[in-house]
Image (cartoon, rainbow, N blue to C red; front, side, top):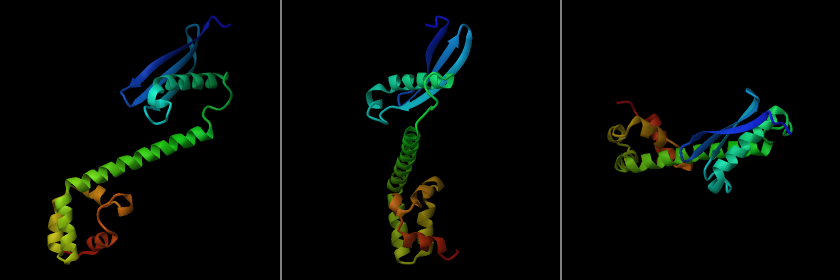
Length: 164
């Protein structure tokens, strides 16, 4: 119906895990609306096999919505809530993986810290703790309920151990 109008899509990013698409609605040589979308492969059932297609459809839908042709809502509350939940779950998983790796990489030092703390040998515990990188210490210090290795009592002893 509108021979001067066109919708084009452009693949912005596809590095295996994340796909980003841009949709553009044009009138002649002028852009009148754009929409972007991002999908993560495997994040939903549909994205396990069709993340690119889903992303393109979302980008076109957003461009049409911005142009006023697809309703007034860009994303439903459920869609936004799902996206936030997925981001939160990804962060939790990444944190858990980092903590688990730090625990594994420093297993011998952590066993020594635990043993020395049980004996109230704070100097030796301090030496064993010093063998661990600051980055790994941050991960290891995580609460046991979140994958951390040190018990609440051990963490308390370390917070209050006598100065050297």
